[in-house]
Length: 357
Ligand code: PHE
View 1 (cartoon, rainbow, N blue to C red):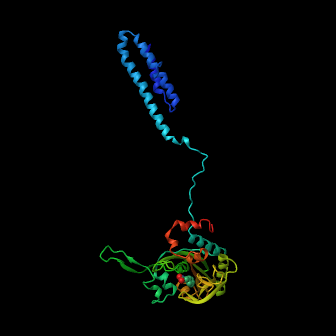
View 2 (cartoon, rainbow, N blue to C red):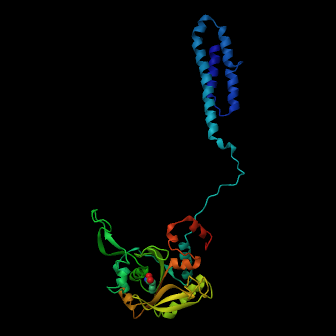
View 3 (tube, helix red, strand yellow):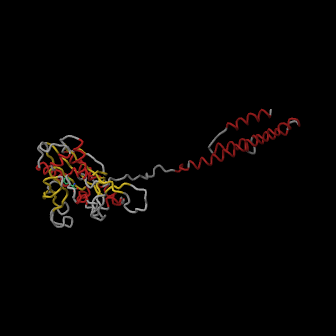
């Protein structure tokens, strides 16, 4: 019966799905084509009795619409599917796009190299806070009350925030003894307060000084502090340790010399120069034609500092040193302008991609 036929085809159409253009075309030919099923059932309809025609007319029309709308929907979704699969044209044999990996900052490279050299001598790494109190940055380190380093011009003091806007620039009240550390020597104090000798550590970190920014000065820079405290530590140990460090960092044959100096927290104190790494002592603009460049300050830890940290200065002695990482990097990479270190210009930073990795 025609009715049963239509029933069967309706089910078939309802179940039919495809994304493929050729299958869809076959569907169209089968149902909607000039010799298709729709044509066929309409032909058959003509032969039906008048009574049958009454009930079948509607059924036939619904069936026709079903076939047509199924075809339309499948056609549209096939087009969309094609758009989504646009990378059908993808050429997998083309070379990849690649992505750039970052590079290490020159200061990080130098810091790591220094840490590694001292690690060979048994020095561990310690760190301390950048916001410090007067005790750790100055007083415990034997700075006299009136020492110029405590001066407002050198040190960034931390001020209490106020809500009043009228006070303008620099508003707020100085909290008194809270400041940004001016050197990493504050970490020496923290280390000695917290532990018991022997101490053998280096302490890298950022320090701040209230200086106008130029090619040769910045308001923040980086230091590495060194501390060695034990029984019977002498100036000879200090010299040998630093001599070894310099040979490792700048190569064998690099000369060192110590000039007497003054720091409140070391006694005796010295500044250490190395033979100029650029001209090898012949004289150039970097060493100002002297053949020598200063790289660090050092000395025997002042007994007052040991006592301030509850360490028996009769039993223990030690040495300390502090160097600027920027300075060391300048001598290694000949970077003439300090500002380059903090401006994050990729053209500058990228040059250190393979250096010292
Ligand atoms: N803290 C000194 C400075 O910033 C360097 C130093 C450290 C000197 C340790 C002696 C001993 O200049």
